[in-house]
Figure 1 (cartoon, rainbow, N blue to C red):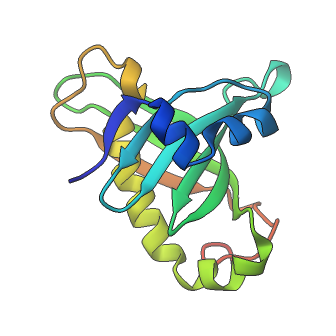
Figure 2 (figure 1 turned 180 degrees about the horizontal axis):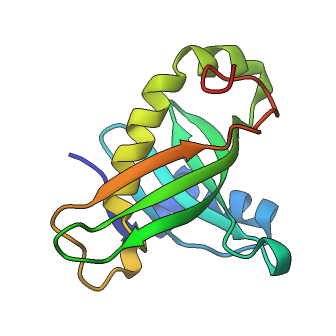
Length: 154
């Protein structure tokens, strides 16, 4: 199985502690992009307002750990011949800092799987009325990102 966009069931809300995570962000987002076979999901958890409009905080559950990312989109194309988007990551990191070293050792794999999820999410996840058959995703990491050093910024 691969990633799919869907509403989160009550059973999954309990299994993945979605309500507890929602409480942390003071938001009730109950949809996601999930790969059930690998227990990996991507979920929007907060949207910035006013001067940072367009910046969105996401959780990516990977290898049983939550990674938080702040991203915004650019270069959006809804042209049926070349649909796609660039996801610009302002910052990202594993929430359990005791696992940081292991996360960094597998950072390249993280970006490959994140791209898989974003290719299915496209421009709206479960809210896409008619998903594109093919969709291109580019991921860029902000070079000024210095919360902790990754292989991507030195």
